[in-house]
Amino acid sequence: MFHGRGKTIGRAVLALVVAFLTTIILLLGFAFLLLKLQLDAGKTELGILVIYVLSCFAGGWYCGRKAAQRKFLWGFLTGILYFFSYWRCQRWERKLCSLPWRERR
Image (cartoon, rainbow, N blue to C red):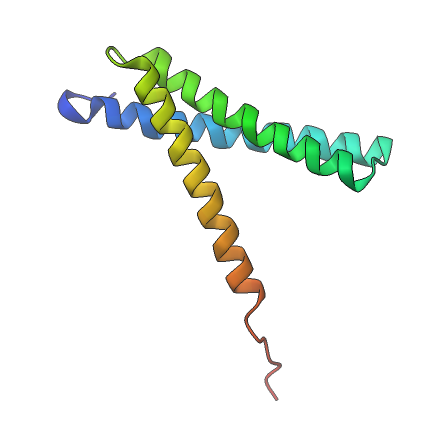
């Protein structure tokens, strides 16, 4: 699928996709558990944090497993990229939600 120098970068991008898909699947399952079990806020926050850590680990594990050299480094890089993208989306969401929305007359 990927050739030459971009092979490892392509695997890192694929690993990010794996991490995001893992996040989506786990969050959907957790939402179902919340619906059925009616957990309190503390347990909900802990569950979401665990899901993000597991997703980050899944992406890093996938990239490290596929890399030919420096497997730990590429797995770590994927985890950092996932965390940065998650952090950036949160900042964007906060900025979007704090804009003064006005109704047009």
